[in-house]
Length: 195
Image 1: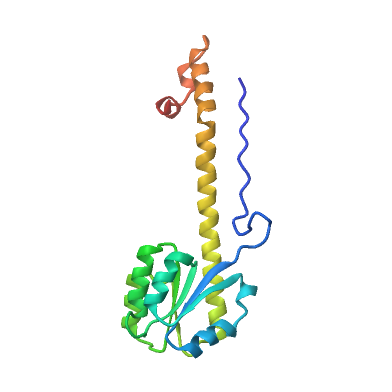
Image 2 (image 1 turned 45 degrees about the vertical axis):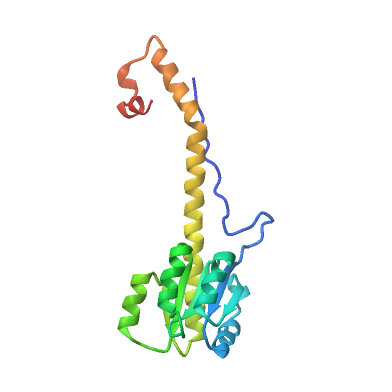
């Protein structure tokens, strides 16, 4: 009995069913309206592969909306009235663990950076925001997300493939075991143990 196995092709995770690039969903959270507008307009988000799904002035509002919109990336100010950006990040990561968070602040304070690492910040930008730096960070985050999605999809495909082919492999080895000229050493101990 000869078994030919063909691995499935990898899916292009960054494209939708129609072959178009999927846009990452971006949410902007800052209590200052002008800063939100600047972030929206300082770079071409569409060209970078993002679509802005929300702009909010409070972290509380953003937290509620994030559960509904499921953004891929949140760009948030740290110093905001009520719920600050770092506390918001911790809560957001609790409800949306795969979201990537970029913090923006006017304070170059090591304590903020330390706390940011503890709550799961993915990057940290200082105000005034440098457009090129923001673009570079957005592209790095996008690449990281797409890479993770691709790895997750490959893992799912390989798991499905193994599950689908397990009966064929099992049947092959069982037939080999029942063949009269079967030699024990022709089958690895691992294969026998997995039966």
